[in-house]
Amino acid sequence: MRQKQPYFPWTADLSVGIDEIDAQHKLLVEIINRASEALIERASRETAAQILEDLVQYTFVHFAVEESLFRITDYPGYDEHKAEHERLKREVFDIRRAFARGEVELDLNLLFLLRQWLETHIKDEDRRYIGHLLKAGIKARWERPGWVGRIWQNLRT
Image 1 (cartoon, one colour):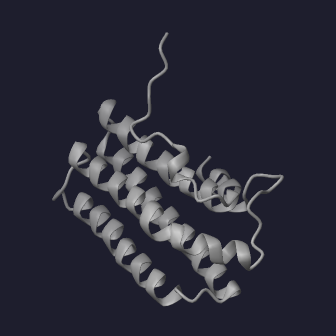
Image 2 (cartoon, helix red, strand yellow):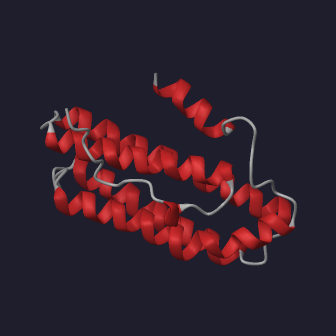
């Protein structure tokens, strides 16, 4: 039996080189892949709504972690990156609200938008702060899985 290829596979070019951040990005990719599976399986609106809610909530958690690291390390690009986070939070919040109102559906257009949103943010915005965090002493590699992902997984089960 052939294994299904995920809609949004995690690839090396998405890695920022800091395990904790990569683990959080992987979880966001996983949520988008869950949305794809829901579309393929013609899941209920309630299931799709929960996946979009998970995307909104985890996006907020992930951005809070990044912003905390910025404050701790006195990242000079904090204000600009936080403004980008605020814009992206509004986008995912608006998508969730439009879905709840029946103005958009979980379809290929929405999946493409979510994938592009995350991929662009990681590759264009997040890569800018990595050198600063590493220079400030943030560890690139961890012996154990990241704490945010573990907590999130426990909340979702």
